[in-house]
Length: 151
Image (cartoon, rainbow, N blue to C red; front, side, top):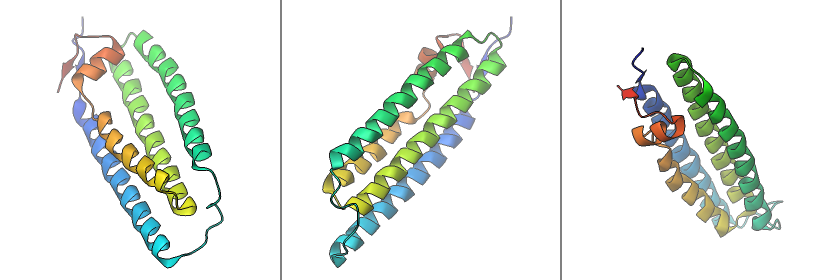
């Protein structure tokens, strides 16, 4: 029987790139937001209700999470550990990319709507992004396997 060995360094590398990208996008968005707000520039989306934007982001996130759960179930059913770990890394990377896209949308709507609520949303997204750090206990719980050895 093979001993399942999972290399966490790849996931950590993805995570650090994700956090750096998220911080840059958030900082640029907030900077442009304050620059525009001090110049009294009128933007076309200022009249949009922020709740519609936030609702659409939450609906998109919910749909992605449901699809991600189905993908995780298929990964759990995989017998070969190397294939299982490869699929899990791919899923993890996809989660990070979707979250960066969500931050980009929040930044776009922060700039174009000039609503303070969007400012709070993008800051919350950035702080909650820290939860994506690859932890052994989370991986074991998601893969439903506590025999994994981590390097």
